[in-house]
Length: 472
Ligand code: GDP
Image (cartoon, rainbow, N blue to C red; front, side, top):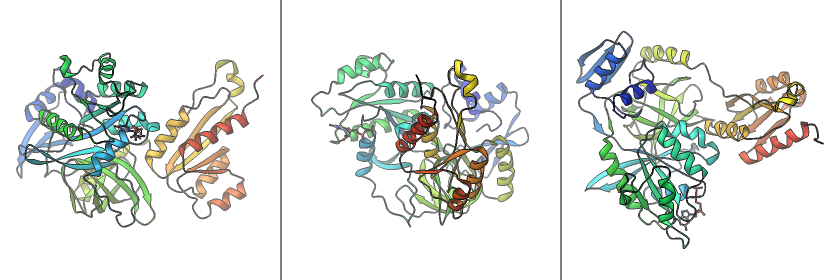
């Protein structure tokens, strides 16, 4: 990574030069030197322990090595609701992974590594298990930023639908390679040709029609052509040639995170480069900590995680944000220097939301009418899903404000804050800290608890109705 220049700028610069790269790619030395010239940065190369260290001015450095290894492709399945994403992922996983209940840890593993026999070799593919449809737009930033290849799932009996189009646009914007899987071919109403015709409107043309998009008919529920789909992924991976440096300090992305009662913050992560080791110091935009425990995607206790490996870690000092990048260090001093720089860039910790102003005529009057909320949840994914769902609620007279949202229990501080701001406290899949309930009673604060996003949304809608003027 050229750490002093944003990924987007690098991608754009290379793209303009006719070289398509993604954020996950490791650049070769000539490209880096060329980039240095483009950005007027002086780049020197030094050899250190078999690694070439590239110094960019003073503090920003990147490393690259001649001895990169092939890493497993990271794949996301996208598609319209009910087109079979869950069924396909389950089918792929079923034959491979017997998931263990590991030491009472409830963190859902947000990615799975599966093993495939391909050209007489043992190969791996990593599948991201993306959250529900509600969180689609956030998934974009979380999923697509770490994805190498996207499988676009289209049901053969239903064809291209709004979320299919949304997915196509996101894939195109991210310039990711795509494989179309036409699902549910076992159904009588299945019409593969019609789906292909609809897709061709979005410039996705099958190879059999002279186009360039690999398309494969499958049945996720019956398991038809799943092997061929996995082979197609590896074929594409070999063309794209995904590389990583195994001996590097690990870097990667936080996929999901929550606070465990005994272990503190726990995170489901994906190592994208380097090797993560027990005892390493891990830094994200908001936290710093020493890795005290690790599990692989099958729930086994392990000591290292290599490139393109999903896993679960604990030992951090704070809850993490999904989509956050992490970097590890072998000594505390480097970690702290990096952390202070990162946290400067990352002042935004909580997630808030303000709905658009209601229509103009009633603006003046309505400016008084704001419903304030404080949101506490179990995972970052829940926060994103809820904020997203709330942002879709249509209100005519009121403005909805989420003052802040955070992971963890509802605390006395939350309740006190709710009292001074006249807010409702929304507790999603989380409990009340000792003392919070009593304080809430004393201050007459309404704490509303939910386990289902839909219930929460419905409740907010009824609050809006209660607080709106009747319409005549
Ligand atoms: P998701 O919303 O995209 O995750 O879709 P699901 O995996 O939940 O599937 C929606 C429905 O379609 C479920 O009832 C599945 O059993 C069904 N389904 C999924 N794949 C197939 C398939 O290949 N053939 C048939 N007949 N049904 C399927």
